[in-house]
Length: 184
Image (cartoon, rainbow, N blue to C red; front, side, top):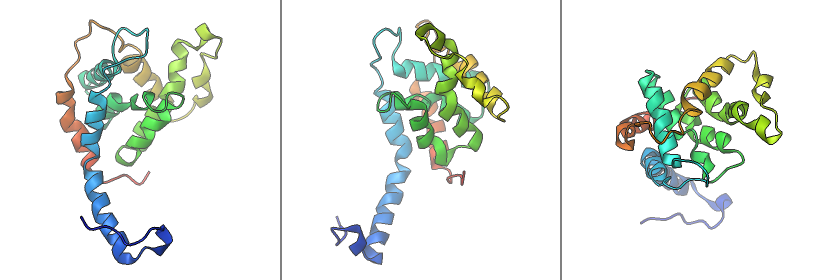
């Protein structure tokens, strides 16, 4: 395989960067497949939960699909917690950053903020502020984020819920991650 000639970026030529751009475009095209592979591996869970992270993701996405959400929101529901594995203290922002080039401002905002909005259900039990989300009252996507959390995310920890298999969501993930990036 042809490689660049430089060992420092500042020494790269136009030809070097054209070569890298060609490889990067091909790599970007594989993003959906890498995400599907990653999420399929979320078969473990934090101790204490009744279901795996994968099952939580499938339940959340199934609920969104059943409610006839737009395709990008179904994909966002599937991927909203992918940050749990590598960025547990800012998982929402991590997932939102992965989605950002491919989803609308609204979907990005919902995913980015859902962690704070979820505190409504548990923070008071741990000495925290359950109304953390109130600082966003008046924001144009506030109610949409409340609805995402209430209708799909917070109720998707049920070992008896019949979620759709990951295979069902693969075409949607590929569709969203193959479209031209938004300029958010």
